[in-house]
Length: 314
Image (cartoon, rainbow, N blue to C red; front, side, top):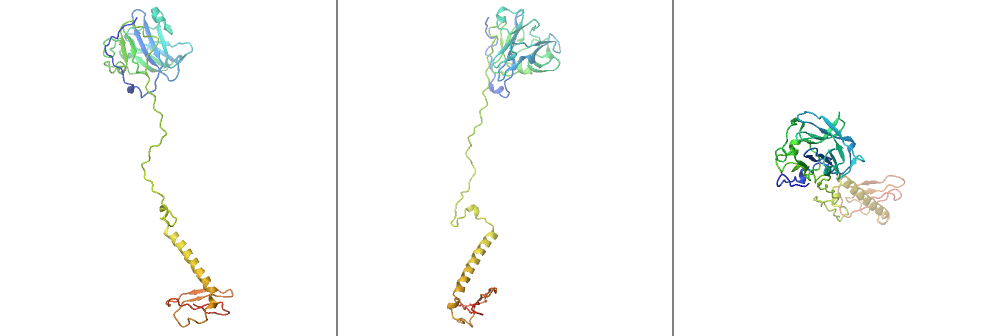
């Protein structure tokens, strides 16, 4: 049968408080009803199927300081798919509960002061996934969401924003309706069983492949009249000197060749006895000798023939 919440205006956790972890299997409902109406529900929020054959419920009784009883989870097909629940109930539970029960157990006996743990592994080597109650303070009816003795004669359902287990019972039960992970319902509120309402956090956004506009300054590759870019203007000075030297040498050699061809057109001794520069062209396999006088008048050139006109003076 249905009933109203025992707590008024129970506020839900914000998605931001659970988005830091991936969703994992957890205890979604624990009912401590009258008689044998005992129910534990497990929910898989995804994204992967969970192999229940590797999982167990661990129980304490009264003031026990350790787990006294293990219930191996059994399910047809073994796997609990994303969005599905696995409901364990007592074999003598009411017919309404039995209709959605996936696994019936005579050893599911909790009275509000017994801790229930969701475990993965073996009885000798296990890891705690989620807890309801505290082993260290067993034989206590715990308050939940600020409601005293909420674990006794109530049905507790995980808030829909919770998407993974919590091994810290103090944080899980909280101190008020704002910071707890549970909703507290009245005794024998079993109409909510067999399914669980869960809101998964939004998926992380896919990183954008669009590049942001560059803020760096790019120097334009401006072409100068010489044909060199500004980035090329810092050429090593020795390289420039070498290039210029080759160019000047070529010009001089060209002039010498021109003068050599003109040597017969200027009379011998035309500029003799004047300050001059002498350029000797050695013939008959002799080396050419070029000597520049320290002073000479502008446009004063003399070309003299030595031995068969092969030498010229200027």
